[in-house]
Length: 189
Image (cartoon, rainbow, N blue to C red; front, side, top):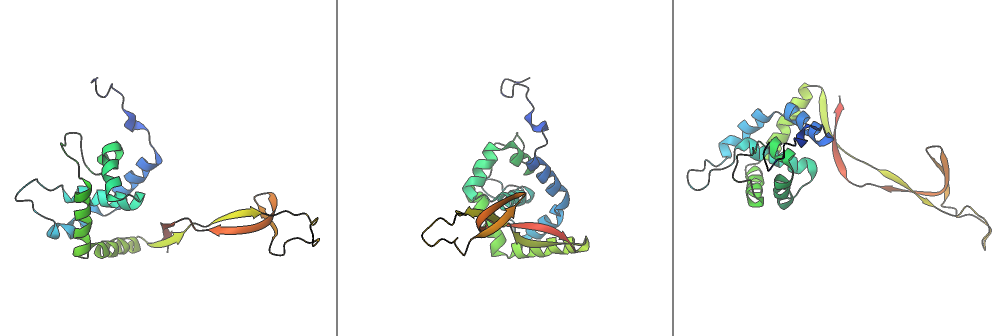
């Protein structure tokens, strides 16, 4: 037992985020994606050695999956041990990628058109397995209630309002369809 850790191993809980990252570690073709990037990746002959391609690629994917900006990803690497573990940043490392390192990696992908090539590669692999990647959106039908009473000046209900059922409950009003954000989902072909 060390003073710093107090002997507590909090990484044994199987959270949804841990399950997701474990699944992504298994299904994403990391070696093929790394082979695509390596010819363009800096060698680091002078100055600080660059982080491994695999580490930067996994950080890039986590940014996309969790919607993190470069500064937020840097903070998350410091704050969330699970993210460091997924990216292969073990406890013996003396430094973590900062936001400018993360930005330079993304610019490397953009400059050489690697993001489109990576998407093509992933789509080919999914097609081989009988799956396809589609963009979709979640739509929330929020109910806006209106008075059902006809005790007003005109003696009628609002003509734009009507009865609707949500679950086993009936409401009088209108639905407001809200599209909060887009998500990617897998569909079998």
